[in-house]
Amino acid sequence: MGKDGALAVERGLAGASWYISPVPKEQIRELLERRNWPAVRDTVAWFALIGASGYAAYWLWQASSLWAIAAFMIYGVLYASSSDSRWHEASHGTAFRTDWLNDALYEIASFMVLRESTVWRWSHQRHHSDTYIVGRDPEIAIPRPPNILSIILGVFKLHTIVLYFKHVLMHCVGVLTPDEKSFIPPHEQPKVIIKAWIYLLVYAGVVGLALRQQSILPLLYVGLPTVYGSWLAEYYGLPQHAALAEDVLDHRLNTRTIYMNSVLRYLYWNMNYHLEHHMYPLVPYHQLPRLHELVKADCPAPYSGLLEAWREIIPVLRRQLRDTSHFARRVPPAAPPAPAASVPIFRALGPMIDGWIEVGASSLLGAEDVIRVDHERTTYAIYRTADGALYATAGRCTHGGVHLAGGFVKGRLIECPKHNGRFDITNGSPQRAPACVALATYAVRESEGRIFLGCKRLQS
Ligand code: FES
Image 1 (cartoon, rainbow, N blue to C red):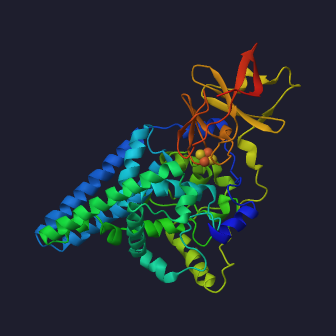
Image 2 (image 1 turned 120 degrees about the vertical axis):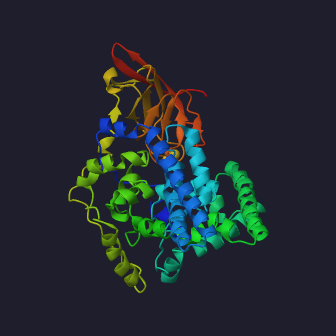
Image 3 (image 1 turned 90 degrees about the vertical axis):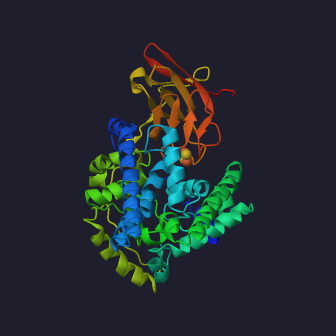
């Protein structure tokens, strides 16, 4: 991503290791457990609210009542603002336990929030790898110096709409920007073109209907909600990172957690616990309040509300107009624990014999568990499945190099803690994007209550 991106790479800020507040392994495993029920309940209620407000708006519009404006405002916020957090959670694959439900919600919410689903799936992963690293993070909402006019117009998303349709048209004719080519793998790029045609045809249909009926009504339901209903997403979404530090490898310095009331937390799917989400993106939205309790002692004090956050942001943005080095400093508690404390490292207990090392007692690994083992210059991950079988793979994710021992074992899969990529632990094969390259696999055996690892890579 240009000169800034090259500089970030040179400074070791690209795809780097980030500080993570330690959480005991047993507790994090509990939080990682996926369930369908909370998201099914919340999603059904969400669609019901959209349907009810949309129906009320139609009925009041037909009756020429001014109350139609209020009904459309509710519909617009539900459609355009709260779809943002549904889009976000589903993109991580953490909303539901069942994958196709995550994918379905992701596609629907992407359409509602005017984001091309394939493009944004990849750009959001870069945001998580390189949060507010200038030149790397494609989702820096307010770059320095801030453009105040663009922030104000952002309430109506006019710029977003223009860019969205410009990109959709470009993608329809097969043109991707250099940035898009840098973060979307080649095998995913044809999907961008196909989906661009789908978006274009849907919008053409809505515009055609409006012309046929000589009415703005169809556009008030699809398309225009982005203009009149996005304000809430801007109000509670911009403070996630605005005016905080850039180019730091610690989310406590560039991300806010803000207390909000239960209505806002429902609309926002708990993304007010944004710092916690960035540290542990595998944790589903409905567990973020519990995660917050576990890490808050290691983090700067949360904001008491959105007003407090905006009171900090606005003066900083004004000053950044003349001094781009200025930012709001977050102060974590003194003397934080070591970053790797929550993922212990195991090493060989003796010399390698015939290519095998002894790792430790069988009790190191519970059911559906993973540990990290470092030997010489290689990092391994050893897993135990629910039926007690052991498997071993390379210890670092082939996508971003993160240690898989911080991830989540379910069935035959390990889910990477950084971007939720998945691998089959029995053969190392990638099972969910952004993981595309297989993990090396290794032999592992258990004998007399001890675990032994074969350090020679198995042939795939
Ligand atoms: S580091 Fe990106 S999926 Fe593992």
